[in-house]
Length: 132
Image 1 (cartoon, rainbow, N blue to C red):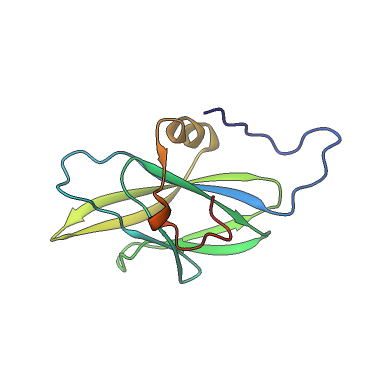
Image 2 (tube, rainbow, N blue to C red; image 1 turned 120 degrees about the vertical axis):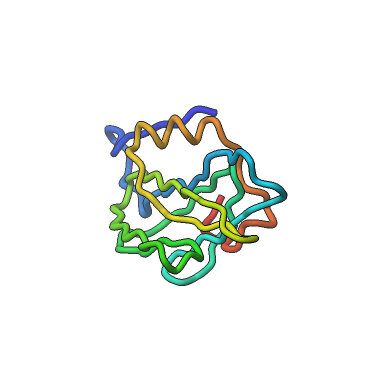
């Protein structure tokens, strides 16, 4: 998989949305399938299993990304059209449940991380109109 990170190419028309890559590193030591939900502005958009990623197209605006863990601070993300952002879900396992926390990754690290992961399963995509 080849990932390209650039603000704009010369002569290209400006993009009408930003691309946000949301990912979770492969979990070691978890038993069973642990796929915490990901919310964008209080709407569940996906479930994110360890070792998986998804991309979502967002129009220029401010968004709140969070998982279901009420103790973790949500991530406020201000996106600009034509840009790419990388958001990593860090998790810790609590009793019978995974606790997710959204963290904005630096683009270079996010690109590297995503190349080592697989796309989410179609059943985990809760917003097919914006996630691919």
